[in-house]
Image (cartoon, rainbow, N blue to C red; front, side, top):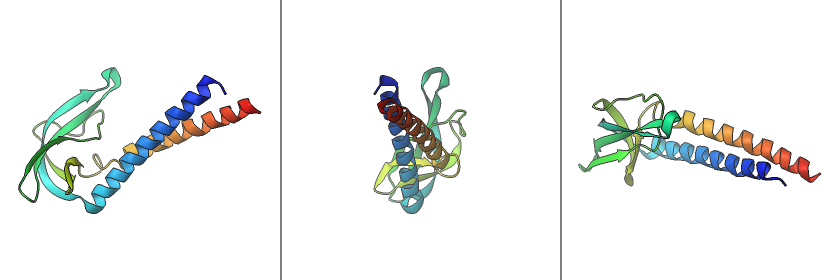
Length: 134
């Protein structure tokens, strides 16, 4: 088996895994998360020329603790700006795990895109690998 199919298999599996993780965290937050008002305190740019913005969120838990954390989901362009009031959904067991509530922050689109892209790369790479063995 050549290097290209092997790299494609690894690359596809990693992207599919990221998609599954984004979807499962989002599903857990939708089912068990707590929604509270919050504020965007900043945006962190990551990834060079083709990067994404990750919002930093500050909110108060229902127990009264103040939390400031960065969302694990980024986008370009950012759907929010610093100083903007937002609804945050957080994991009551791990308040540092928080996202913007709603379509922009739930992660469904991100997760599905990563999963589909990873699966396509994985399947195509496997087809090439099997073809090279025959």
